[in-house]
Image 1: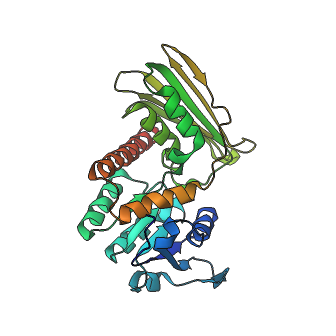
Image 2 (image 1 turned 180 degrees about the vertical axis):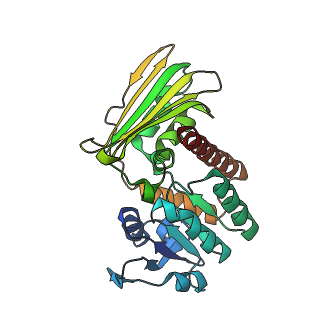
Length: 293
């Protein structure tokens, strides 16, 4: 990646909220991966015209432009599937913030479409690039799990925009799958008080060795954004994660992985393993939603 690029890939950012704004900043940074990318413009439902000299363009122009090779999908979760499908059909590579879709079947269809078109479809998972996850991965390696739990709390989140909690919270599920392997669903319940903007989803999972894992997503007014975890092993216990450093430039790290995919620098085995993990997590989220509803 240190070589001078022969060609820069033209990028359009769809959605300019928090993630989209960070993506636009990173695309203009003097980073090695950014040298391969050229920010063409952004797409937004709002009339913004220009953000720091970057021009707003219409969705139709982004889809048809010969300058645009890549779409970064940073919009609300409920719109991801439609945007991905449109850009893949237009022959563009796609980077999308998680979750790729709010349906396992739709994700399978989109991956097939990407393969048919010969385009890269990359689902961002910055939670796997965090210092806390690196610490956890090292701590659980080679240990025999007895039981575990992960309880996430945060303020209210609109399901109409971000989807069912098993999908909007899929980064927590991805942590569990990445740490302990593929999981099976035992049970799932949803406690919801819409008038109070409160919900609590409780999911009981099982590892391949039949070890229980509990995942809880709890959201409501006054709840601070926090992640409480507890893992018990034959050799001891791990209760929460100490401060292990700041998560610097994690979107840039994700962009580096995406550019490596564009350049064919990631092996077929790694790509297949990533796709398998992503689809497994989306399948679990789908099954959890069915159980709760």
